[in-house]
Image 1 (cartoon, helix red, strand yellow):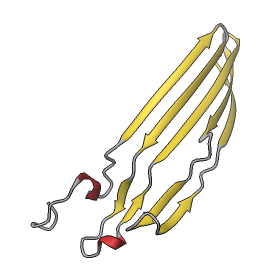
Image 2 (image 1 turned 45 degrees about the vertical axis):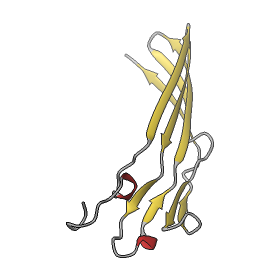
Image 3 (image 1 turned 180 degrees about the vertical axis):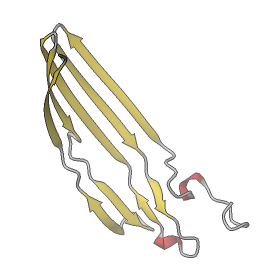
Image 4 (image 1 turned 120 degrees about the vertical axis):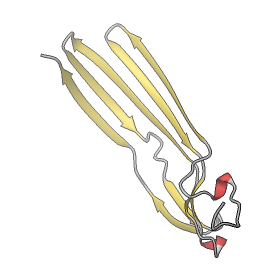
Length: 119
């Protein structure tokens, strides 16, 4: 209930994400390992306006994929290569109606390489 007399649905509660999912798959063989992570965040309301619904700010659903590989060089040394947001999925916000885009944030794909050691 908002303001004592208005009932809101799950799509009208600011910051509440009604649909979200994560899935992870990994594989290991001898010194080599690979992993992939899929993340889904459904469309949700980021800014509520009770007086004018056309001014409400929403974020469209977003699907990201992260992938990585690693190789154990020695028992104490591990090499890794990871790619975040593999398919360059943007964050898109709209105001009131889906055809009124407020802003688009490009996070870009990010590549990280690393060496991990235990001494």
